Each structure stands twice: as C-alpha cells, then as structure tokens.
Length: 433
Image 1: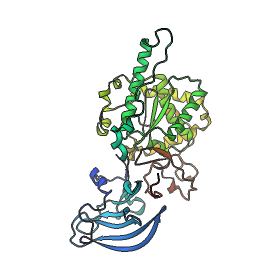
Image 2: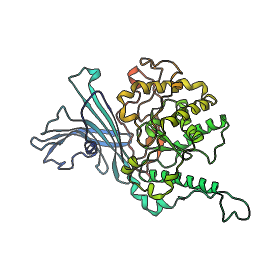
Image 3: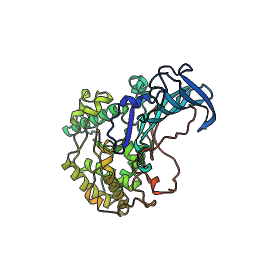
Image 4: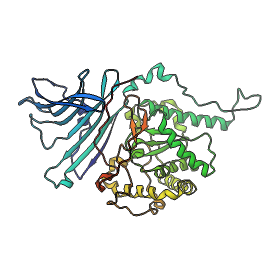
C-alpha cells in the first residue's frame, strides 16, 4: 500500500507513479563495484542504529538510471537503511531528475523494509523563494496484509451483535424494525472489515478513542442519545476527507495531521455526527457480501460515501448547532482559521483536498465568518499544521498512534508550513518483540 502527497509550484510536469516506487530501491540492476565506486564517509547514528556511511558514484558508461548519492548501512547485518540522492542519466545527474531521501524500518527480525520516501525537484534558474517546483511524501504500509486470509486474522467476530429481544418467542422471532437495524449494522461492519483488510483503514486503536471522546463531548452537551453508539476509525490515506457509514465516523490520517487543535477536530467530527443524526444514511447495498468483496484499487472506484450538496448543507447547519452548545463553543475561532487557511491554499492543493471515498472538508460560511483574519507573518497564529504532524502509522501492522513530539517554538513565519510536505527523519530502532 502506498500513499503519496505532492505539492507543486506551478509545474506542468507529469509524474509516473512507477517512478515513485522505484525510489524504494537503490539499484535493481547491478549495485556493485562493476558499476559504482564506494567511498567510505564515516559512521553515524540514525536514532539508536549505528551505520556505516558511503558516498556512491556510478562509473562512466555504467548506463542510464544509476543511483548517485549516499547510503547508510546498519552495522550488524549490513543492510542499507537509508539512501539519499538521485537517479542519473548516462552516469551524470540531470536537472530534470527528482531527488529523494528513502528510509527503511526494522519491522520484523532481521527484516528492514521501505517505509518513507521524501522527494523534491528544484529549478535553480528561479529565485531562491520560488526554486522548489515539486515536493512529495511517499508512505508505504500494509506489509502484514498477506495474513488477511489466515485463521489468526479471521478469529475475530464478523457478524452484528444479536438484537435484544424479550418475551416467550425471543429466541426465534424478530420484529421488522429489529431485522432492519441488524441488516444496516451488518452492512456497516461489512464495509469497515473490507476497508481494513485491504489496508485502507487502520485497526481499532488509541486514536479512535481520542476521536470518540470528542464525539462524546458533543453528544453529552447536546443531550443526544444515539443507539447504537457512535464509533470512530482512521482512514490511512493522506487526502483530507471524512465520511460516516452507519454509526461509524471515518476520518483520514491526512486530515488528522493538519488540524491544529481539539476545537478544529470537533468541528470536523460534528459535521459527520450531524449526518448520522439528521440523515441516518442507509447502508442497504453493503449488506450483500459481494458488494464489499473488492481489492484496494477497486475500492477507490466502487466505494463512495459522499454526501450530496443538499445533505452537506443540512449537516453543516446541524453541526453549527451542536458546536454552539458544546465545550468548544468559545474556541471556534481556531476552527474558522483552519477553514480560512484551507480556502486560501486550496487552489494549489487539488490532490490533497479532493476526497476519494468520502467528503471533502466543507467550507462552512457560518464558520468562516468567525475568528480573526489570517496573518501569514504572525508566528503565534497557527491555522493548520504540516502533513505528518499528528499521526504515525506502523507500516507492518497498519496501527496508528499519535505523534509524541514536543511542541517547538517557531523562529519565523516560514516554519508554520500549513498543509506542507516536509522531509522524513524517523528515529531508527532495531526490532523488539
């Protein structure tokens, strides 16, 4: 499974997806002394892992597409854990090649696998502030998906919980309403199970609990009694999107990453909570198992949980009501700033803001009117965060956790970086059971 987020600065170039995948390998056709020179540069720790560092140069006439740069080799099994450079044309780097920094993590005993690639293309002919034409993050996960058909994976319950009944015939009969509820709930589980099996949805975990606490705050202060309970899950992709399926709210990793505070998070969740309350969206079609038996590629074309414009308007209006009666009522100015920043940057972020499965972030007019004006030069006003600021994904298990980095005081407005792609710098460790 791969997720790319790219930012371009007016470039009309097109990029082949296979080119990004190539950056997870140093050279598949002759990474040896017959094609390269290796110059020892010293030792360096990457996190807890001590590495030998080599500068790598392709030999003259070694062929096109050779790697030119630096490699880091861990000092126990001598596996390359990082390589930073560029692929060349005819033995020399060209101005049209994307530079990249590729990292591997120790995800199983003695097994280092590609996890992160940062890539960038610059145009030296432009002024320094306009020199970056292209930046991208490539994340890889889902290495354990091969276990999707194993007994270990399938020993969890798949069906809906039995509908509570009473009376003498409780063991045999269900009312039409009970049957309808059970069918809808089973359809919801079908979708969630399939999205998790194909690597698009994270397994249940700690981040879900954080989201559900915010949802509970909204429910309690608005005297909502929703049955069955509303749950939350994390979509593993970077696109900014949310959707609800039955009584489950799904929010993308990318959206979680860039939200600056809890009030902004509550605003996104309130819109989907409102959709559940107001529209009670039907899941009828997903009750048939063949409709959810899809691959990851098919899921992006066959699954759709988008609301119509009319449904979005209804949800937004109800969400504002929820928020005004919530613990976040006095903090909605920061949520308004987030929406203003998104509106200001949306023209250059089409790949980031156009949802694949669900709903793009709604630019609610009512919310946009709240809060102060955007101040790009004010380091104390943080309207949105860079990608990767909140959530980290275990590439092996697909589990998500909150990033535990300490807050950093900004030195300049340039470091605010709303919605931006930044390099990776993982803290490498060796695998421990």
